[in-house]
Amino acid sequence: MTRAYIGRLAPSPTGLLHLGHAATFWQAFLRAREHKGTLLLRNEDLDPQRSKFEYVEAMVEDLAWLGIAWRRPMISQSQRTHLYRAAFNQLLKQGDIYPCTCSRKDLARVMHAPHEDTDDEPVYSGHCRPTHTTTNSLESATNYRLRVSDGTSVTFTDRNLGPQSFTAGEDFGDFLIWRKAFSHNSEDAGLPSYQLACVVDDADTAITEVVRGRDLLKSTARQILLQRALNLPTPAYFHTQLLTDDHGTRLAKRHDALAIRTLRQQGLSPAQILQMANLHVTTVTSDS
Image 1 (tube, rainbow, N blue to C red):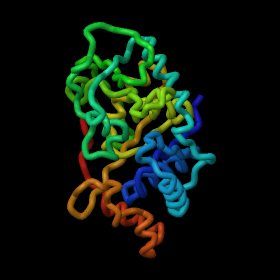
Image 2: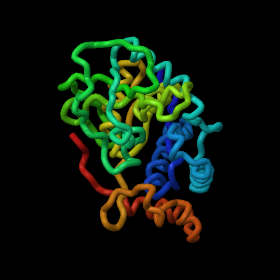
Image 3: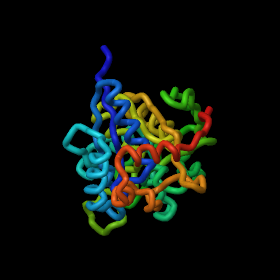
């Protein structure tokens, strides 16, 4: 029996949504409508330093203004840490992860989806990888990485970009699963990485298809490995082309002039903004 279609929007409240978000989220909305399915809104507010309530309000208002509908209530990751800890404990018990003592500066950018940063997470050097499988208890003063055997191949067929293949040790390495606590609160056990939280949430909410930008293709490979380790289902994937500014630079939240909120204030209609988004789509051939 075919499962009912469930998609999701997953913005992080670290800035205003821009044209790139409009294009991708509109595509997700159309995909759900085409399949007579449901669309969920997930507020990825795990980072207490960067997440702002005013951005949560803005993204909800801007999405609704564009005409994108979703099933309420909105899901907030900050309220779901017990699920991430359970998944972490499972990986720890299985010996799939190990402590990592890399610095806070080294780990800062990998807490977020790569499209929120300038580059994808670099291939890990293996500096902290133990020579044998170990099991430990959760230590709040330690980061943890998933052990990925070099040469492991991850393949999947993207519903938009076609066949994809990535190899551990070449395209990505052992990646962050849990970040240590940086506060002095003894009850603070740290935070899950973007990859772990995303996998847990997609499975818990029964997502059948993930629609997101092509800059997350390597994250998809990592997440498939996590799904295998946690014995979770793998949804279908539909990666959209990226949007760029007039200079060919990928859009990011620093592009305030192309923020949906800014364009709204200039008097543009939802249809005009979506048309602008289409004009900025970068035509790039599929990865192979």
